[in-house]
Length: 366
Ligand code: GDP
Image (cartoon, rainbow, N blue to C red):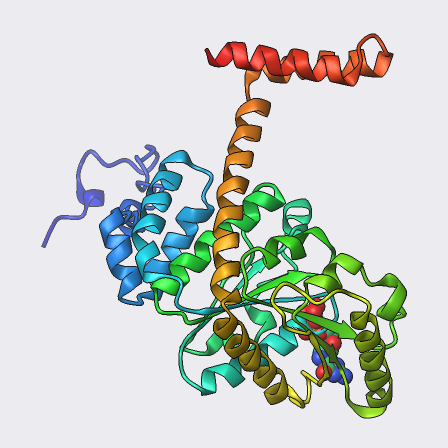
């Protein structure tokens, strides 16, 4: 046994001992416990995982699509291009309605209904409010309780960064990845506020508009443009003592639709009532959508619409790049403020100011 230091002759009761060595305030194991950074996949690994239906890889690829970092964008674009041959084999359905119309309740039951028939469903969203409020109204997994835990469903909230056009483009690219991963039903959800419908319409085969009875919207408030886009209008909450009102609203919508010219598809939009909450009338909605697909695949409109959309997105992408390149140019940025002031002061007309800015920009490109 070791001799205790107190027994040593040198030991004097009144001397100050060195004391106990304090442990480091920094956890020495921290380094070891630090989560190793996940190695980023290569383009081929992404494509391979996606095509095999690996949802983890798919999610990460979507994150790349949504990322603003140029290096991520470069990878994303390559992955999308390589996934393109595996995509296209799905039905894409846009679902729109004002907040409270019952989109999430309905998508939950619609989704389960279609999944019963087999296949896989991806629910994506375009939410123009998410940029402003930094919180997405749509696509929140918890809003669709049953679907969010379904093994054949993939739910992704709206991309939040950038302009509506940018957000919409990312959703369109995500559709391609989802299809390559074997998702044969794609829902794209959006809030019924106007512009975002146009964006959704430009990427889906069928546009479903969810309406409520008795909101006074039936004839006056309804934005004409949105109704014209609809391939089907469904009136939700047709349950309890709301059934009669829902039926009345349905006939109002039917009458209003008569006033519009027949759409290019040749398909006359249908109006149905249902209850998402009680699961009533869901089958009828899907039967209508099925009927539409048989109709437009036969008359060629299905392919025509997809081709038109592909063209639209090419031009949209060009427009977006040109705009970004112009407005993000440092010289132009500085000049813009001065020109704006000149126009406001009346010292220069809008047209001259614009021309001057554009000429400067073209000079800079040389
Ligand atoms: P969203 O904002 O369009 O996604 O709407 P939600 O799905 O969150 O629904 C808004 C509210 O309406 C919720 O309180 C739902 O419970 C209710 N709701 C949705 N569908 C129905 C329905 O078919 N009948 C009734 N009575 N209420 C419903």
